[in-house]
Amino acid sequence: MVEHREHELSRLFGGLSPDDRQSATDALEWSPTIEIEPASPYLPAAFRGAVLLVVEEGFVVVRASAAAGRSVVTVAAGPGEVVLPPGPEEVLSALAPTRVTVISADVREQLIAVPAVAARLVEQLVSAVAQRQEALANFAQTRHTERVRRKLLQLARAHGHVVGDGIRIDFPITHALLGEMVGSSRETVTRALDELHRAGFVARTGSTYRLLISSTAVL
Image (cartoon, rainbow, N blue to C red; front, top):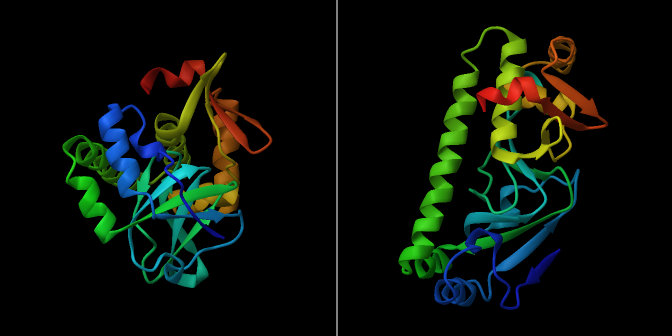
């Protein structure tokens, strides 16, 4: 479902000065938002004309098709983060009820004409590139348990919240999803998580993971 925004400030521009927030709001006045339900993959055609997507609520992943019918998660983003629309062989999916703002080329030009707004966009894009580089570097690890450990640390840094005994990753993570993120099978991820649990690195409640205090010193 597509809805038009009515002078609502995007999560991306929170914390800017009142004048800069107003400029961003004015530029986004007619930018549509898309409500994305979990388990409903969105193909590139759903974002025709978009050059950037801003996650306002929820959490999204972008999947690319791989050999033998497997897929790889290339992007994971939460509220206030920027992602590119999915490419020709990619799909975008939500892990929870999600709302994204669609930014067209014209709107992008209006936004970058405001220095503080442009700086915020660049900041988020740099963060997205850094996360992707870290994710790619993780594939150099030959031990699957180490791949899973590093991916959980990356997710905790980017999307975690401090709780009494560590850092909780506040979006649903399945073994299959972790497998897509680290290039391993679901069964291999299950064995790796069992090993990390025995080592006191991670605890699980339902589909939510916590990195325990002793393991978060390296964050």
